[in-house]
Length: 362
Image (cartoon, rainbow, N blue to C red; front, side):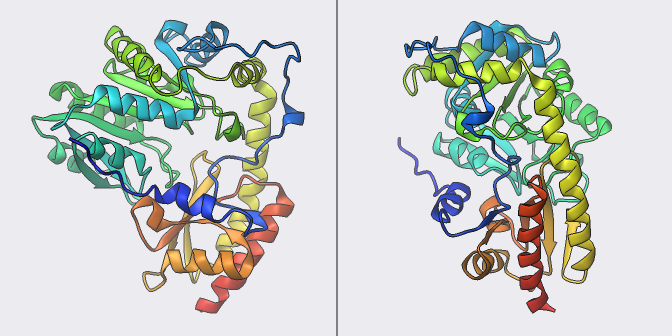
């Protein structure tokens, strides 16, 4: 049986806006890097890379998890997006029950539904604590998977240690798997795969390192059960992209082998951008409420419920040439995601134009 998949609103909004803006405060990654910022061997052979990824690069990814896994527990993919897709298509079966959160990443409910699964969407309102009791009530005998993202995208919120403890105990009793989207986790050495064997971690070089065009992501596990899932994902990959580009893997290996300057760049953009974000929030506090981000390059902004976030984003794009992400693309409303990890001149100009538009709602 074939199931229809809905329009991917996030990428539809982003790519349909191309060429229409001066300032991008929408993409969730830090300011992107260029080819001048990376290293490439001019003698590199453009042959197929291994289907699971070059061993040196997989070893470098495994090291990020600080001993929790080995290179055989890792598969390299075309961004975190492909890793997530491969997992859904190999792990899930028609009739499975999946629990995910909104506002969130549309793939986490559309692809499972397209695979014939029943999906429950838990509301995790940006700025609120995660509702552990709601998760408990949502669990069913046929629940096979819970999808969580901490720090959250688009909320920027994180699960506390106590919340994780309660969640993992609950999932363990029910025998439910966890897909942990750890794209924005500050240190993968703290990945939840260290605590829960029925878990797959997904991340990439796209967001924190500003290399989304590199399309290098991965899935990792720390258990024999997880390794069996990774192997199935690799087999499915042979039917899709076959292998990654050796160019991307070589650049990625160099980045992973020189993380200190990459991390310093990330933290510097967050630190400088946060100052301007705070000033923006203060001068517009009568119209908006900014949820303080917890280590992410973006923040969630609540709007007055009388204001359409998509309408606001459309006006901002059309009249002021600034791009943000309206709540509607995350299955929510009356808010938007604002990325602040930008050079100060870019961020300052974009926020000034946004403030001018917000003033019309006073």
